[in-house]
Structures are given as structure tokens and as C-alpha cells.
Image (cartoon, rainbow, N blue to C red; front, top):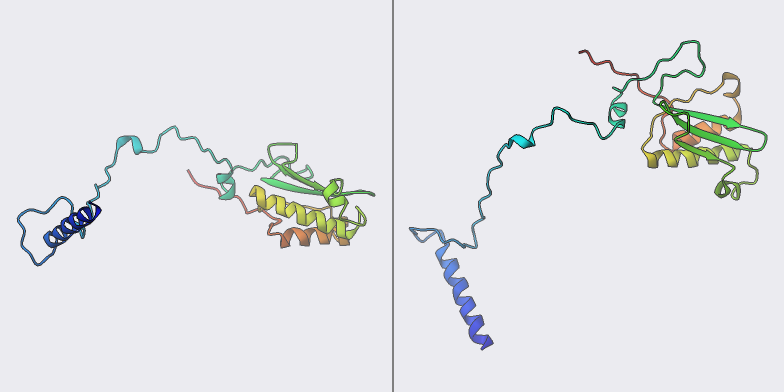
Length: 190
């Protein structure tokens, strides 16, 4: 029984192949031909596929990444200045090193890293040395990459800039792929 079904299927297949050969003249094209591709319907422009006039941007950082978002200027006499998308604050005390990333719209840090965290504290011989500053920079750079923040403003106090710990922190952030400056804002004419 199985052999008769196989032979019948082979005969059907051969007859379909013979009908689809280009050498033979046919009056009608069979519905199921092995060598032909089924035609695809042309896409039609539907009116409901147009962009809505009340479009809401669901990615608020899109304008920021294109340097088109508004930066609050603040007063020129205030320090630190308020013209940024993200600001990096680095502080050292006698016992710990802390780095925080602030958004322009929130006084609460978006990201932070400190030697007060147990994971960092247990790996370091001291929580306030140059190696601790470098470790905080590496960990914060990794967290910033995961959050998608690759550019931020970092303005250190001029008399602390030359310290070895601050230099190690800056180098660790740069090696982690973080740019410590933001693009200038582009003004689009209306």
C-alpha cells in the first residue's frame, strides 16, 4: 500500500514538472508550479499609516543625543553652572571616594558609585587611595555605558585638578568610553 502511494506521488510530481517546463507551449498556467514564485501583492498606502499630528515622543533622550534639547542656562554667577544634560560630581573625603551623575531635571543622582559599596570596599586595600579613585571611575563608566549615558559635563575645582586621584578617575572614565564634555547645543531656525 505504501509503495503504490509513493509511485502515485512521483507521477504527480513528474507531471507538474513537465507542465512547467519552458519548452512546452501552454494555454493556461497551472495553479501549482514548482519553478514559479508566487506573486506578492503591492503595498498600498493606507490613510491610517500616516504619522499622527499629535505625535508624542516616547524617547525623551532622543533630542538630547542629537544636541537639540533645551539646556537650562541658569545665572552666569552660579557655580556649578546649570547648562548641561548630565553632570558628573566627584568627591573625596578622608575615608571614601564618591562619584555621582546628575540629570538637569533632578537633584537626585541618576547613577552613583562609591567606595562605601561593599563590592568595591572588599576589593580595595584602602577606600581613599588613588587605586580607589580609579576603581570608582571604572565601575561608574561601566554603569554609564549600561544606562546609555556616554557624554556628560565634568568640571572639577581648579585646585584639585592636579591631584593623582582625580587624574586616575578621569583616565578611568575616558578608558571606559565616557566623554567628559557635551556637544554644543544646535539651534534650529523656525
